[in-house]
Length: 494
Image 1 (cartoon, rainbow, N blue to C red):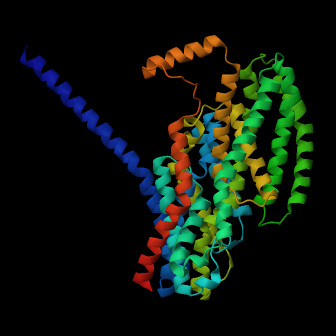
Image 2 (image 1 turned 90 degrees about the vertical axis):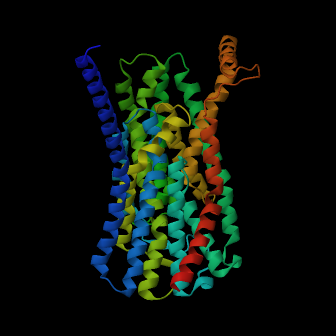
Image 3 (image 1 turned 30 degrees about the vertical axis):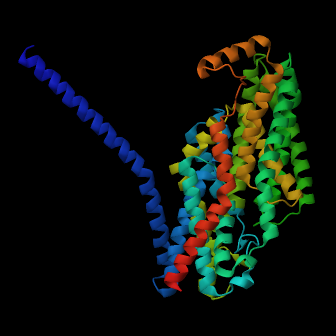
């Protein structure tokens, strides 16, 4: 081999090595970009509050609390919002970028336009404020609760488990309250209701989603005349969605503008249902003209309603959940400024702004991971199945409000995804012919090198078990973390 050839080969190796290292460096920079921007947002939030309040002994606590509140808002965006848009992305009804934009706009709008202007400072009566009436003690308890909830949600996002941010806050408040005033400070009947919601929320969401999927399959997609069946049923299903969301938003989404009781909300929902049916029926008829008589055509009819459902879910989530998440921050601000502990406080506009914009930034920077988990990795979704998930989420919240049950929107949405997946497994077992079953068994026997009985699994069990475990330990984990932080903060600063 000539010296020239050897030199060229050595040069090629050097260039390949350099290209590899440059690619690795670029990838590392991309990985560091999101955390850097998140840190910048937290820092800017603190600086804005400093500019508004000035730098003095009283405002220092508020400034640091605002930074922790911004951190919490980022984590809500990274974790909680995936439930609203994840199914639409998984069904390919909208791109990841489109989903991020829709969610960011509607979550922010929901928080700023219709977010609650008054919240319970101790998270819906979990702790009796009379037993934590010493202002410094209360401040550090809320500080610990907010930081603990943010850290837990951050950990859950890193693991890839969608958890309830409201339950994280509840656990944080409970843990700090116990360390501040003992076990008697906790409203245990309320905690029992919340524990029951761990089971009720996902089960109810899963059952309702599975029932709608069964209805659509039996009455539309499995019929011989699919287009004719779609013209009869799709307008009604879209109208049910409109009625459900009108009721949902009336109960949960516009309480800052006007408070509406359940009966009035149901009337509003029925009116919306009727109007939507009259509007959508001719539109579906025109859209279905010339379509092939296939299941793929039926799925296309659900894409636009699914995108609308994702936007409405995002608006309602921003209106209802962001206020709960920044409640401890509002409590700290009021207690520092007024020097007293009260059961309910108003949320200052700048506090709601931190919650709303932090949520959007968290979604844009870190949201894709959980969106893919909810939309793609639990079970395979298409527009029809994802529509059932969205419809179930709205209806389940209405039923829970009627029964006065505290439920988690996260548990409902993810439970609905599980319900759709397990229904698909059940339906396949009931309808599969012998050839399909034999083929599956042969495939699984080769894969597992065993002759044990096999079933077609359309829900990934590993993700299922991880998410369930995260749900179960959210409140106690946040409580233990919060209690530890409270002891540390109280000993250092009180």
